[in-house]
Image 1 (cartoon, rainbow, N blue to C red):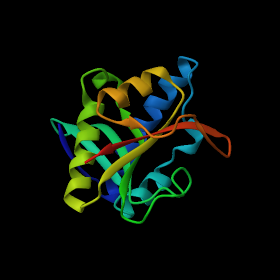
Image 2 (spheres, rainbow, N blue to C red):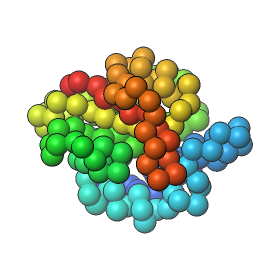
Image 3 (cartoon, one colour):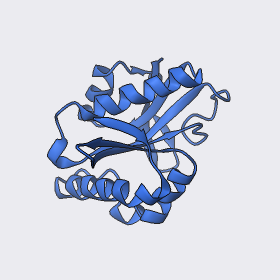
Image 4 (cartoon, helix red, strand yellow):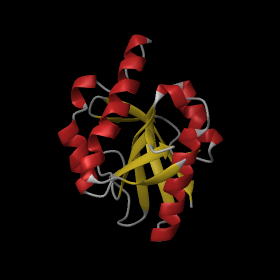
Length: 161
């Protein structure tokens, strides 16, 4: 898979992946993101900020994530330039279960190393499958208990780069 930061005009590709995954999760009774909160303009904003990352297979966009420079909502105590923060990691359903999430997370780790940031961090809801994924890819749980921020209850993980 080829992974790179996306241009603004590529935002609809990532938004389509996010909507597909969101709809799939809703169909399984496991809503993670509301389909209504995923729009091309918001994804384009992340692209303009240099945060949108797209993974491609044979030129087709198959995975996406945001790789952010800070995350004051879920990591308010973090020092500047201490980590990159992964959000909205999604893999198109036709490519799920093939290690694409790990490839995306490995790429994020490489970017952290290149930028001199000691950690890549993320948060996830209390979903055993996601927790297993992050633990299996070298992320370590940071908190003993879940963290509640607004209406979100999450577990925070980090991976040393």
